[in-house]
Length: 269
Image (cartoon, rainbow, N blue to C red; front, side):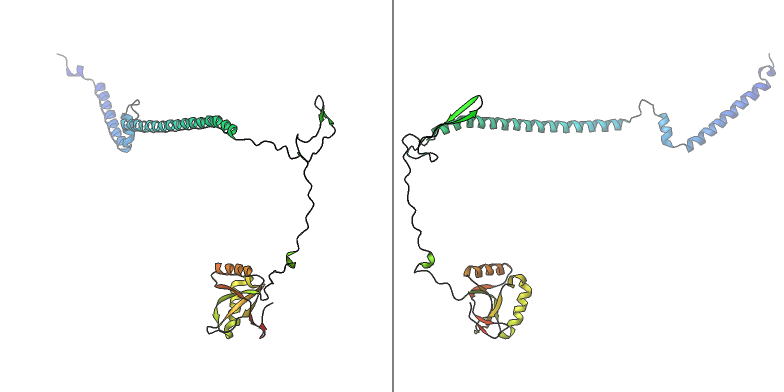
């Protein structure tokens, strides 16, 4: 039998010992590196390159494509409906235009045309005139003016005398000797009239610039401030309309009373 020294040599033991140490070191290093590297990175290393897109992602994309396809179908149906409506409208317009083209000439032909009145002169031409030669394209044109056959001269009427002026008529209405005015606001006491007028001037402003105030005759309820004078009743009514628009009571009256700032009676005009 062979001896044990013939089967195992010292160099073989050393070699396999080193291989074992290197393998153990690699195992320790690999375990440490796997603990440090993120899990997603390791998962990506294990995932095949061809299967990079997950099945869930593909399903979502397919679902999105189906939704887009459904929306496109709806848009197509809507456009098709609008096209059909436009075609129908165009056919209706064409039908109506065709009906007008047939109906209008018949209506025009049915309208009675007035005959020419040969008893009147045309363009004040009462007798034939000498022909007038005028140059035209390719030669000349002869123009002759003459009345219509059977036309009668227009009778000449003498001017009538003008009637007498209205001012000279015996039944003319005399002008109103008392001018008009407007009563603004309610009744006031005579001692408070000036203060009330100053308050009205502050509130109404430009509306009262052209007028002067007078105080009406005393009554049981008091007096009223009258603004004027105005020539016609229409002017007084227009003034009241302006004041009523801004919530002031107003009444057209005769402009009679005493002036507020002078103790003299005022009888209009």
